[in-house]
Length: 128
Length: 377
Image 1 (cartoon, each protein chain N blue to C red):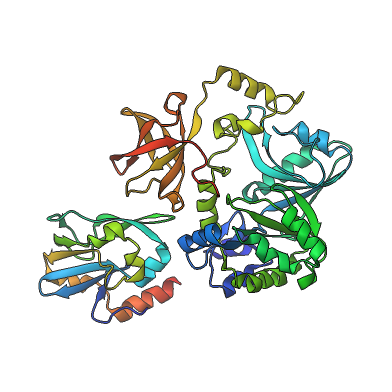
Image 2: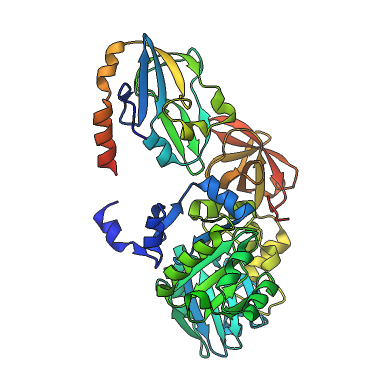
């Protein structure tokens, strides 16, 4: 699965899709593949104010717990409640249905600290 | 992985097969092993519903021979060895003077003076050194780890998959008639192996077979043929990730988690394997004291019905007081809940007790349940 060109990416394998002043955040296909079967996702609270690159939750696979980082800072306005009953949705649709949370961007210029799809591809290729 | 790690990690005879199947490989006990192929949950389901095939060639296989093996082994282990009959397999634990465990093992008696001893890969060096230092006249010991191979086929359809590869109907009938924890020579005429050892043993809680090949070079053709024949039965390759999930559901201990140099078989739940009627064995006195005082911390099985997974090291509480910590933990798909083992003080260990596991600062309910979590139909 190649990563969408219109998204931005973090070194921690999250993606950000910006829609006006709201950003949608998820983890990449590379991340879900590395984690394996995801069994539990702990998302930030609605209304929480998160800082860029801070740890905001947890993604657990069968074998490991991984911190979830936010690629940008802002106020959490929505979380993906589908993942309560179906955490494996993150494995199946990491870039679409398996989105994690949405936030209102505190500072749109923080996007400059993220990677383009091409740069992210290069990062992944180097990690292999 | 650094170059140093790459150069010291060994490969089993089936390494290329795993790569060809798209396995994710990890270093494990000095070997590059498949942790998963299609995914841990899919592989777990295959074993419970159909069959899975495992490469266990990393495990240490020691050949024991001579007239003194039974008595020698009886002095070093908790369970009976000398009274095993040829064709029998038996679980056992080598103990230290404190009653702790050096390793848990399987003995396979092949004949009056011939045995195979299978030892955990992680303990291979420790056990090899210990057994050699303890040898008595009448016992010969040889190590075939790395040269030999071990393939396991586990699941309700295992017998149907293994049968066609045996040479003739006599062998197939014998295989079907094998009782659990027995072993016998077998020849896989379909792929022209030399004599292999076929055992009806396993680490999953399902029916299944373990196939021991003295010559690892015979493993790839057998592996491929089993997958070919097994395709019609839904056989899938399964890795160490699924293996751990399956054994935990089946209530089987893993050395380093439920057993260790400081964890006795009494604490670990293997009281059934401790034969105090043996006149002597290493650690017998310590175990007798433990058994009579009955104060030791012991393992409990925990079932968590919430959404939050328990993990190794998380603390366990009873009524607000920390009483131990989680050892093994996993999702138990066959159980429909998260499952774990924990070493806790005796007062918290009765079945039905409600305990709590601390996950990132929050307490989550965990019920003490009897083992096993899962039993095959």
